[in-house]
Image 1 (cartoon, helix red, strand yellow):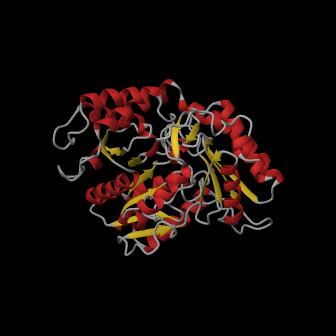
Image 2 (cartoon, helix red, strand yellow):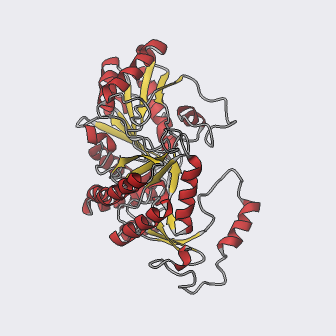
Image 3 (cartoon, rainbow, N blue to C red):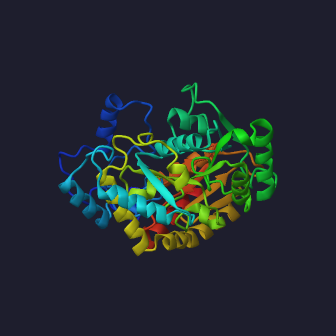
Length: 443
C-alpha cells in the first residue's frame, strides 16, 4: 500500500496547492539541468513544510521523519522559540563578521558551550560554519599547541568532505573517490566494533590501537587522537565499554590532544548532552555542529583554555563563523533542550524504539545487531548465518519505508546499516506510526 492511502498520513491533495508551487516531478526535471549531478538526495520528493516529526512535500504528501536532517533538527523544524529568536535578530542586523565588529550573541553561545561540554576545567570556544570546518580547526589547534604533526583516526570514521577531513574519513565511496591526493600525517587504527572484532573488550581493543600508534607513528609525534564517541556515517558503531576511557588515559599520559567529534552525537541525541558523558570521558577538545542551532549552519570547537588560547590572534576565524542569526538560533535551541529535557526525550525514544527493533531482529535473521543510544539507533543487516554485509537488503528496506511515508537513512562502511534519528520532540503518535511502517518494511 502506498503512503498516499495509509491511515494516519495526509492525502496528497489535503491542502489547496497553489499553481505557483511546482510539483516534485517538475522540480526534479529542473534540478537535472541546474544542480550538479554530484549532489545527491535520499528521496525525489521536494519539501514544502516541516514540523516536529513530519515533513510535507510540495504535492501534499506527509512523511514521518526519522532523519531530522541527519541529526540537525532535534528541536523540530521551525520550533517557535527558534523562529522568534531568528526573526528578532534579522530585524536588528544580519551580519557584521565577528572578526570585524563583534556582538554579544557570539559570546553568549561560547559561554553556553563552555558550561555544557564535559570537563570542569576552564574552557574557550570558537565558532564556525560546518562540522568539517570545526574538525579542521580542532586539528589546527592541536598541532599548534603541541608542535606535533600526526593525527590518529579510526576505521569506519567520518569527519567531513573537505580535503583534510576526507583524509580523516575512512570510507572511499562516495566521500573520497578520485578526490585525492589528500592531506598527509593522518594515521588510521582499528576501531572497537563489537560485532566484528572477535569479541575484544574495550580495554583490549584500545590496547591494540595504542600499540599500533606507538609502533608505527610514535606517541611523541602525535598531536591529536580524533574519535567519534559513537560513529555516525560509519555505521552507528558503539565501542565496547572501556575503549574510550582507555584511549583518554593514554592520550593524557602521552601528551596527545584527545578530540571528541560530537557533531552527530551531541546536544542530547544519545540521551545525555554529549555521548562522551556516558563513560565519564572528558575530551581536551570537542567538535560540535548539527543539532546546535535548530537547522541553521553553526559549528564550534570547545576545549581546554590553554589549548584554545595557544593559537595566535587571527589564527582562527572565518567570514561567516558565528553568524548572528545562527547564534540567536543556537541560544534558543539550547533553551528548548533545557526546558523540555530533550536528553530525557532521547531516552524515552530509545525505550520505545529499541524494543521494537529487537523484536524485528528476533524474527529476521538478516539483522545481526541492534545498537546505539538514545535517539541514535541502528540495525546492521547481513546475509543470514554470516557477518557478510547485505547492502541490497538494507537499501530495499529503506526504499520500502520511503514508499510508505517514513523517511529513513542508511549508513555504514558496507552500506548495510539502517539508522534512525527522529527529532527529539517527535510525538508518540508519529513515533509509533513510524515504527509500524518500519516493521512492515521488514516483512
